[in-house]
Image (cartoon, rainbow, N blue to C red; front, side):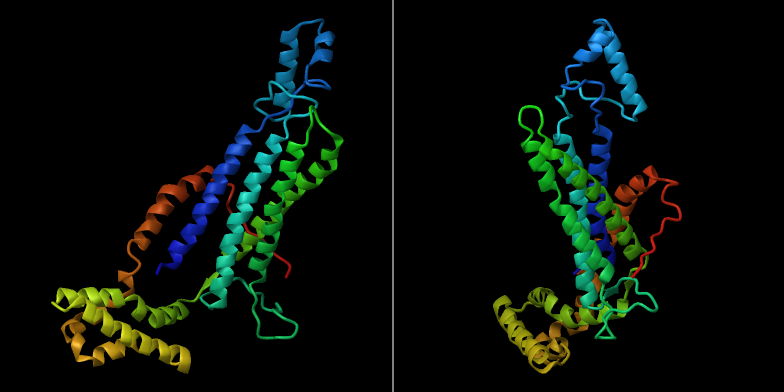
Length: 321
């Protein structure tokens, strides 16, 4: 068992890894520079009467004016398409993180534990008026799946460059690179809309916990009985029988989980009855999850937020649904 906050931090951890990857790729981007048609700079060397230093100065200057800190020292007709694969791989990895997160949201929404934003006049289904499908999360998953498929294009483009290049990469690159950035942008805008309006229903979560916690607590009950001097195998068998009886009530008759009541009614468990509620305390089962959340937010999330201070203010996304 875990907490909603811990679940969200697991999503955040993946997104932080993507942020680091994107920041690294961005910082390492190189410009082709002034290299001439085949990368040898022969034409520029002629232009400057054989002065190689002037060729290098021109290369650096054009690189700076184009917004790059450095250029490739060697290249052919084009810069290596390996660079494209690194860029699109980083974006695709982001897509995988968002897909996983939104799949979790959809699963939790099916349990009615969480719900994404739902507009006042939004229609979840033209046939089933009651439906409140998590369409934003579904959209994120659909777009992310497309984003995750794009690296194959850049890999094939890089792998089939022949000695210098072939023209069959041009149309593919124009499609793949633009689609990768546009899709990532759409995914993040939709995710922003989801997270800003995500609703959590604690009462539903409490009910689910109350139904499952007695089963989860059986090991603790056995250990408590053993500490009171009971035989472990005998205790295990009694718990097993009672658990299966309670499970049958839930699955076959649609009733609530009555395992706790069965334990309380069995004189065998009298030694631990005064401590039963303590043994069934949900806080016992989440461990350090609350502290982990605080530590994670302070030590890993906040430093990244500080990097973008002033750029995230009043950030919002409106969707047409």
